[in-house]
Image (tube, rainbow, N blue to C red; front, side):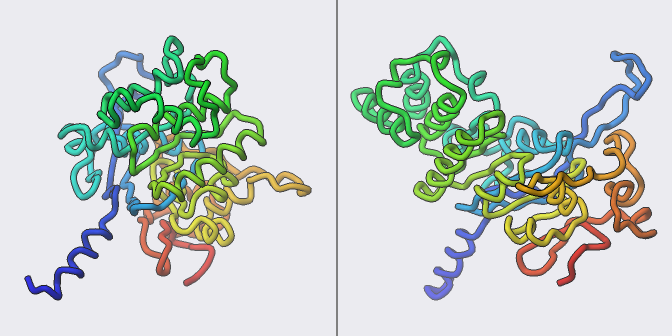
Length: 337
């Protein structure tokens, strides 16, 4: 290798995605409809079906979809909690399960803020003890520096230093979310994954937490993966968006571009259904979500799609490039390149 080739090789390495999902499938065997719960007569439920996704370092990505779209299953695959039934799930070009089992690097680098933040924190432990756990587990600082680092983390998430002596039972919902974020940051991660981290809170508290997450992502150079059903939250917080429908990602791209000019009819339907100030609520999308046990032939959105044509009933569209920055899985895209 010549000296001239070294910078190019280094650039190629730096451009490798942190996470990459290649045709990932997750199939669960469930009893056939009408059969007894413990019957051996089963059918495969495709919770994930050919998912393609690439997440680059430093980006902020919102994964959006209705309940049952596969967001939670996708999250478990990304975190290495479940082995996918098919395809490849990679972290820094290595299988995620392999990276997770090799040692503590993955567990330290990829931190999680759970939807049920209060339930994820031991109520018998003080806030300080909860934050000290990852500090000690990953040997972040010497014991004599723990108190100072805990105070620093509490300050970073907008809590006073004396909160370290309190218990989660005495905190509001918003404060508990801040504790969960501080605990996640204690391991000094490069990736922060948040599952509906602001849902169930009043609008003012949501706004405060979104501002906090945005500043943390920017100031610490974090890669942020945010699971949500709220397009408004996705639009404010994340640069990139991935829209999921029935186990598939149907559209990806810059958040503003996708939401302002959706290409997939499902993305457009989600956008139209989002409440707007001083405007009447839109009509809900017609038709029912198909059962994942009995998907329609062709495009799985064709039974609800106002733009469906004859070929949509026959051909199953795959996610493919649409312009330089976007990808869509649709035979009849709403916009043209």
